[in-house]
Length: 495
Picture (cartoon, helix red, strand yellow):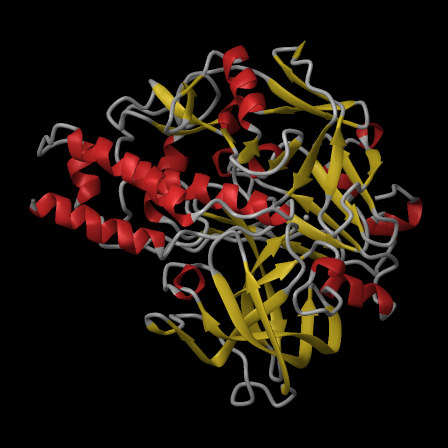
């Protein structure tokens, strides 16, 4: 009975703190970063923040629920009803309650951590790392990833060498990518989640409140901290896959990799849900880099404002997403062009954006497994740096799983942690292969990290049978550039 009560309380907490997700050129000589000083690059970093987590299988279900809700929002359809999401969490908890409890087992350890809420973009963590390889493929989940999943925090990016470029820090084990910008007078550093799947830019206000009271240990903006801050009476609110913010628009000075936007209009959040306000959330705000037609604030995105003010030549955002296990820490976002040092120029392809509402969505020409075409046609993919997994229609997911030797049940899709299966997505008749390491997420049996793993592709329960939501599992394997000026998407193989 006592255990049931603990799980009931846990479920209520989790349902109210499910992480939310966020959603991203023509190759011309004047776009090349090194030749054009009117572009910026910013680095991404990692700062370790100790944390304890709920059971990794519950975190996994949160992750899947979040992706499904995000896909519904992206495709303009109704979100899965709460009772369905609650039922999926109940299934997970029933399995955990039914499992045998060994005082020395990882499950018991994980249960002792139920009281701590995980951060917005957390992926499942695990307690079993002793026999996991830290490098290579086919040898299980990287011990570096497991450590990051347990500890959370940000891994700092190396300082970019390209102009107009911000480094992207890695949140935990590749679950999000964060840049540092400066806002206000005097300028303050703000850690900002860079999200190609939304179009609103906001930070917390000095009067920010959450269900827990204050909005945590973050940096805030207002008249007390910035003499150039001007608040308006125009309200805004944004609801993500889960989690929400509400506040008012303001104007203040914003500096992104040396590009100075004076009197830029954006949001300050007076209210944040716990998915954003918790101390364990490693960012102070979010910058949406989709098209402003998608914006709830109804104002231009920062990159659009940079272009309209003549600070960059075109409204282009380009992403190199880093993988923690590689230990290169070279993630970055470039404004105004492409950093030609990050990709193989001969592989660059440019395709039209097929989204009618402002997402970055491209036509998928083919999906292959180990070189064999799945036969899927007419698919499109929303490319979203703010989503970790790939969420695909159930029939497509089952087909891919069957071809890579995986299985799906009512809980999740799994593949062997040692899988070397090669999954590739083709855009513009160019094929981009997903590293097998990105297709394994979490050992199902925490004591057997080389057994079965949760797969990097999971079935979505909403949307049409042709729409995919493609997150960092894929984007770590390609250079992505999105061009608002020409409404185009470019992809290239990494150098």
